[in-house]
Image (cartoon, rainbow, N blue to C red; front, side, top):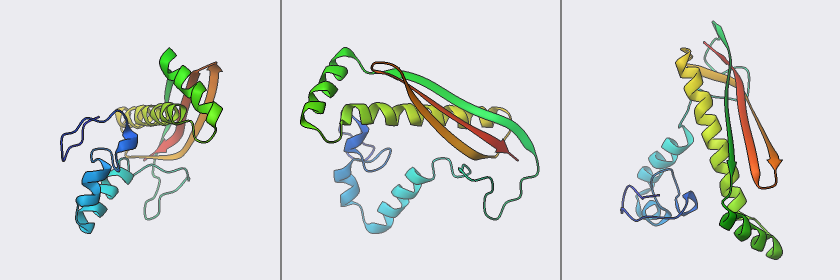
Length: 147
């Protein structure tokens, strides 16, 4: 991944404070710019919610269920690295990164599906993650989307 401010390459999202700005560049920003960067990250898909309403909006039409699904696995090297991390305990960052990438990819697919059928909001978002076999994870996101 590449920082949009300094242009440095980083091996994973965990070196970033937001989707595009590394931690070092983020810390160098003035507070108002930091707030704008965080808002961009948090509001990537602002009209999505796990509830069945969005404050200030009225559901006028239900378009159906939208979904996103992805199946991902670690490489043999990643699996070996994660196995070594389990020996020492704590957060297994290699698997955390796999889970986060799976969740993000499935969520983006769900939002794309909603856009394809003309939705302007997605409500009732639900996640499900399971291991299909050792080292292979399935992430499923679905929602009752409206408007």
